[in-house]
Length: 554
Image (cartoon, rainbow, N blue to C red):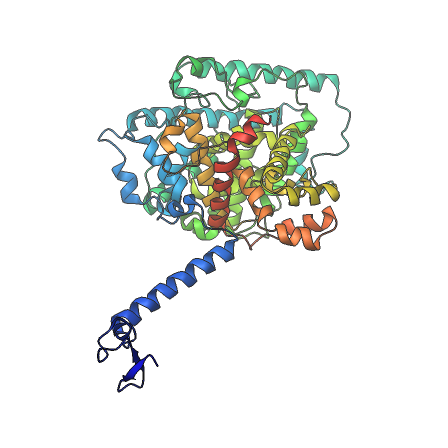
């Protein structure tokens, strides 16, 4: 009754007027342009639904920053003034936080992130400080050798008997021999003398590490890397002959005195972290037995280090077998015949730097897991003294993971627990039911900073973003600088990432796991199955929503 006729297409036209009405226009076949537009809109809608359901939520504002390319060589060079000074440290840290560092410039960038170089230092200032830092490192190496000689044979046991001669598995906690009072007195005197000796050498502000982080800007490129490696070869070669008869006192550094550095702190440089340099000589001084134990475990861990790092350091991987063995002999390494040349070099460098660190921070000494943190650093940093001070900068925060009283570990597990509780009360109640609310199942992630759960490259990316956060806090860069990114810098980014990795598996944990052991197996099985950038996206989203709440809960 409403139809006025039909068109040639067989579609009835309504409204009369010979098919010229409104409905006639609407019912005309769509044009090709309209079809294309509809198809594109449909794909966009499908993509939006897919990405929303894939992650269980819309992507966070942080993730829109995350997908940018890493800091490139050209961008890095553009950040410097003609005298080699960073003219915009804030943007430098922003770039690293949002996208990481290109592998070709990591060796130059990392010392800035780890506090070895001051962000405001010139190239000339860094060169002066680098020379001083090299002397300090070499002195620690001489002191280690002299300590071995003055330990009445008990410390030398490892030199003649090789590593692991007792059949020990390398665990730090074990039964100890009773040390004579003479041993304890001798080592105690060494502890005091090292602090006096190193403190005198660091009378200049530039020589203070933890409070005035600055050093030489390393030259990049394969040629530079090879040259740096050669420098280290000569330094290690000199270990067997340079100063065994020197007049350096045998000293154990509880860390350099911080008095000078504090006088020269910039207003922007905050003292958030308590480093060894700000502590007094401990009441319970390490004994000869402690150093003997540390030496044995260091060497066991050094020769056990895997070869995952090799593709990331071709200059070190190209070392000849003869050169590698010579370096191993220079540090007294044993039981390395089964290793290829590049892994012998890696083990020798691990040994030398970790032994120096034992003297630098005898309160912590050496614990298993520390070699996992050093290995990526010596892969990227080819000069041993620079790698040592980068490791010291890293350990300023991580050293608390290796305290025997585990106070630092318990604090961090408590933070992870609170993040989960505030973010997902349903998951937290399930953990409480399993008596797992203390989050002990992420213990390994905390101790070695995700090193076992992530690939080598993923580890470097996570650490770089974490170091950029810590550098921003160290230099007192305020929240206003991060408004566009929203997530403020935090010393605890690692813990937010750990909590995020658990929250990503909330459904599995709630529905299928009925004991903490099952959750522990799930966490240990994450290796190779994590997306580091999604992990950082989720971690920063947690920082945005929970950072202030977590801070006020302590």
